[in-house]
Length: 222
Image (spheres, one colour):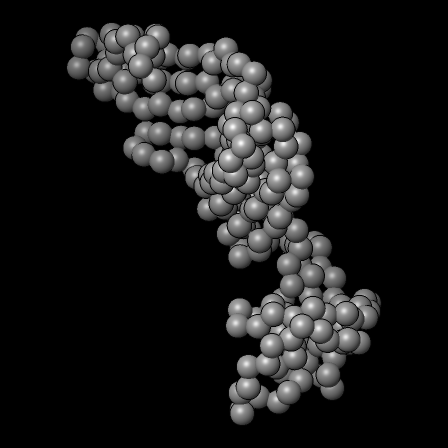
């Protein structure tokens, strides 16, 4: 920012926040002034600055995350978007934070400026719980609320069938069991101390060292 009121206005500024206070898709700037200035200058108060962004034709998206297994405000989550801008593939990332410096607070939304992008090829959310969520072909110019999906607990293995729990929060838990019916594309990593069925379950659960495609039958346990 090289010109305009934010550059020329004088004040004893202590903090600043970028926030879309009028919900038009363009970030506005709030600057707080004063702090201890009033105490040091006979009670004189200073006026805070609020600068409205008039916007332009660029595209944008704002995401509000709601955690379930993670904290509800999703503090600590990382949001990545992949778009095509001016013919080039561009990745952007935002991290949800409660604040980023002394006396400073930022909104809990993840806002992205998208220039001339016509859509968002991929939105990838890395939740604090470890869950990774992906959204494809997302429309631009919108406020999008994303709720953290359920996650799987560690499997329990009995006679080749493994059970798991879909857990979203304390009030939303579903128990399931899976019996594999076809395995394809598995890479075997031998481990002489592990039974074969345990190795297969690791492949189905997305073990970091293995990749597999699993066709299975899922049964809800009431």
